[in-house]
Figure 1: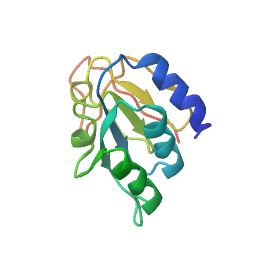
Figure 2: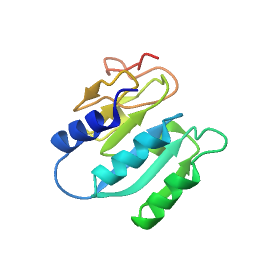
Figure 3: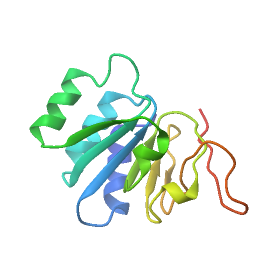
Figure 4: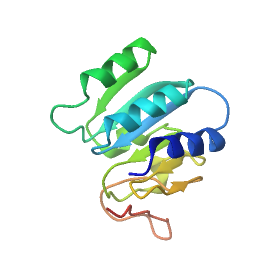
Length: 136
Protein backbone atom coordinates (compact mmCIF):
# COMPACT_ATOMS: atom_id res chain seq x y z
CA UNK A 1 0.00 0.00 0.00
CA UNK A 2 1.45 3.40 -0.88
CA UNK A 3 2.13 6.16 1.59
CA UNK A 4 -1.01 7.02 3.56
CA UNK A 5 -0.43 10.76 3.09
CA UNK A 6 -0.70 10.36 -0.69
CA UNK A 7 -4.00 8.47 -0.37
CA UNK A 8 -5.42 11.01 2.08
CA UNK A 9 -4.48 13.89 -0.23
CA UNK A 10 -6.06 12.12 -3.20
CA UNK A 11 -9.26 11.40 -1.27
CA UNK A 12 -9.46 15.03 -0.06
CA UNK A 13 -9.08 16.30 -3.62
CA UNK A 14 -11.72 13.96 -5.04
CA UNK A 15 -14.38 13.79 -2.32
CA UNK A 16 -17.13 16.40 -2.44
CA UNK A 17 -17.76 18.39 0.74
CA UNK A 18 -20.10 16.90 3.30
CA UNK A 19 -20.50 13.85 5.51
CA UNK A 20 -18.59 10.78 4.37
CA UNK A 21 -18.80 7.05 4.95
CA UNK A 22 -15.72 4.89 4.56
CA UNK A 23 -16.06 1.30 3.32
CA UNK A 24 -13.15 -1.08 3.92
CA UNK A 25 -12.69 -4.43 2.21
CA UNK A 26 -10.27 -6.91 3.72
CA UNK A 27 -7.11 -6.34 5.69
CA UNK A 28 -5.89 -2.76 5.51
CA UNK A 29 -3.02 -1.32 7.54
CA UNK A 30 -4.47 0.31 10.67
CA UNK A 31 -2.09 3.23 10.11
CA UNK A 32 -3.79 3.95 6.77
CA UNK A 33 -7.24 3.98 8.37
CA UNK A 34 -5.99 6.21 11.20
CA UNK A 35 -4.53 8.66 8.67
CA UNK A 36 -7.72 8.64 6.60
CA UNK A 37 -9.98 9.45 9.54
CA UNK A 38 -7.55 12.08 10.81
CA UNK A 39 -7.10 13.62 7.36
CA UNK A 40 -10.79 13.50 6.47
CA UNK A 41 -12.62 15.07 9.40
CA UNK A 42 -15.95 14.64 7.59
CA UNK A 43 -15.86 10.82 7.98
CA UNK A 44 -18.65 9.79 10.33
CA UNK A 45 -18.87 6.05 9.77
CA UNK A 46 -16.60 3.12 8.84
CA UNK A 47 -18.03 -0.18 7.55
CA UNK A 48 -15.43 -2.99 7.36
CA UNK A 49 -15.77 -6.37 5.68
CA UNK A 50 -13.09 -9.01 6.28
CA UNK A 51 -11.63 -7.59 9.47
CA UNK A 52 -8.50 -9.64 10.18
CA UNK A 53 -8.27 -11.40 13.57
CA UNK A 54 -6.91 -9.09 16.23
CA UNK A 55 -8.06 -5.93 14.50
CA UNK A 56 -9.20 -3.28 14.63
CA UNK A 57 -6.22 -2.38 16.74
CA UNK A 58 -6.95 -0.62 20.04
CA UNK A 59 -5.16 2.52 18.81
CA UNK A 60 -7.48 2.68 15.78
CA UNK A 61 -10.54 2.11 17.94
CA UNK A 62 -9.41 4.96 20.21
CA UNK A 63 -9.08 7.33 17.22
CA UNK A 64 -12.55 6.36 15.96
CA UNK A 65 -14.06 6.74 19.43
CA UNK A 66 -12.42 10.13 20.04
CA UNK A 67 -13.71 11.45 16.72
CA UNK A 68 -17.22 10.06 17.23
CA UNK A 69 -16.91 7.78 14.21
CA UNK A 70 -19.09 4.69 14.20
CA UNK A 71 -17.60 1.31 13.23
CA UNK A 72 -19.64 -1.53 11.76
CA UNK A 73 -18.17 -4.94 10.97
CA UNK A 74 -19.97 -6.01 7.78
CA UNK A 75 -20.87 -9.62 7.02
CA UNK A 76 -20.60 -9.18 3.25
CA UNK A 77 -18.59 -6.88 0.94
CA UNK A 78 -21.82 -5.30 -0.31
CA UNK A 79 -22.71 -4.20 3.22
CA UNK A 80 -19.34 -2.49 3.61
CA UNK A 81 -19.54 -0.49 0.39
CA UNK A 82 -23.26 0.31 0.26
CA UNK A 83 -23.51 4.08 0.64
CA UNK A 84 -19.75 4.53 1.06
CA UNK A 85 -18.22 7.63 -0.52
CA UNK A 86 -14.72 6.23 -0.14
CA UNK A 87 -13.83 2.53 -0.45
CA UNK A 88 -10.44 1.18 0.64
CA UNK A 89 -9.73 -2.18 -0.97
CA UNK A 90 -7.22 -4.35 0.90
CA UNK A 91 -7.71 -7.57 -1.07
CA UNK A 92 -8.82 -8.43 -4.61
CA UNK A 93 -12.59 -8.82 -4.73
CA UNK A 94 -15.04 -8.61 -7.61
CA UNK A 95 -16.89 -5.31 -7.40
CA UNK A 96 -20.42 -5.07 -8.71
CA UNK A 97 -21.39 -1.62 -10.02
CA UNK A 98 -24.80 -1.61 -8.36
CA UNK A 99 -23.17 -1.77 -4.93
CA UNK A 100 -21.27 1.51 -5.10
CA UNK A 101 -22.42 5.08 -5.24
CA UNK A 102 -21.91 6.53 -8.74
CA UNK A 103 -19.26 8.93 -7.44
CA UNK A 104 -17.57 6.54 -4.99
CA UNK A 105 -13.79 6.69 -4.85
CA UNK A 106 -11.70 3.51 -4.64
CA UNK A 107 -8.29 3.36 -3.01
CA UNK A 108 -6.44 0.16 -3.89
CA UNK A 109 -3.36 -1.64 -2.56
CA UNK A 110 -1.39 -0.49 -5.59
CA UNK A 111 -2.15 3.12 -4.81
CA UNK A 112 -4.65 3.47 -7.62
CA UNK A 113 -7.25 6.08 -6.87
CA UNK A 114 -10.38 5.67 -8.96
CA UNK A 115 -13.17 8.19 -9.06
CA UNK A 116 -16.58 7.13 -10.35
CA UNK A 117 -15.70 3.58 -9.42
CA UNK A 118 -17.49 0.33 -10.10
CA UNK A 119 -18.85 -1.77 -7.12
CA UNK A 120 -18.25 -5.21 -5.45
CA UNK A 121 -20.11 -8.52 -5.50
CA UNK A 122 -19.83 -12.26 -5.59
CA UNK A 123 -21.03 -13.96 -8.71
CA UNK A 124 -21.14 -12.70 -12.24
CA UNK A 125 -21.77 -9.06 -13.00
CA UNK A 126 -24.83 -8.01 -14.93
CA UNK A 127 -24.28 -8.20 -18.67
CA UNK A 128 -22.31 -5.19 -19.80
CA UNK A 129 -21.68 -3.97 -16.23
CA UNK A 130 -18.06 -3.06 -15.50
CA UNK A 131 -16.18 -4.94 -12.82
CA UNK A 132 -12.94 -4.03 -11.16
CA UNK A 133 -10.42 -6.52 -9.85
CA UNK A 134 -7.80 -5.03 -7.61
CA UNK A 135 -4.36 -6.60 -8.11
CA UNK A 136 -2.39 -7.80 -5.08
